[in-house]
Image (cartoon, rainbow, N blue to C red):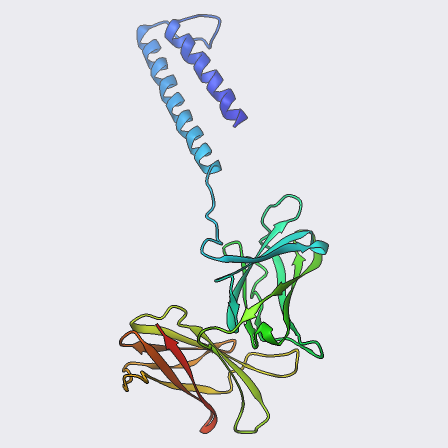
Length: 309
């Protein structure tokens, strides 16, 4: 901008000279009337172009980036001190419930407040029941590069806070300064009005424990809806890896109306434990999804989840 200001000063000075013909104060200009008219025209055109460039530069510098957290609820804020980073945690709602909970992490430099978009972020949910502790399934941000300035992930809370206290450790490796730090936040988890999580021990071996969480539909509507589940296997009290060893089939029914619906698509594994399909709700009301989870032809679990809208 200082350079543009200087350019304006020179252009205005030269135009003044041209228009008023003050020799010695400006560049040499031919004395013929045609030359004077030509020089005046050139200076006016250059001046207009400079104005356009200046306004364009101002417009670019004044551009405001949209806030990526619009529509989300901030559930915690704090500092990962060792990483020199301020941490903000967002969710779809301030009221967390058992089941699949998407979370978004926003990072800022703790001094300059500028966004950090290159960092390695991991989450570790922990339930303290007094006499014992355990974790739960978690999806950590897939990349060290922020997505729309945020680091997206998810936690599957397998029980409510009625049984103890939930915390989430958020570990940050700030790539801008190569420093690491941790923030621990307490969260309260309630039971939803309609459960979106099934936990079961496989009927095949009576040993393996699974957790099946419903991801979609989050906002059901009349017609074809995306249907998505995510499946995890309990390996230990601290490890719940995503699983794809079971197949999922379902039948939707309205228990109060005694009918189902056509054009449904059974979920199939799409990666990282996620199964995606389609469910058709032909009207509003209470729908029950009758689920079957199998390993080959062997039934591991038959259960149901309700959706009322």
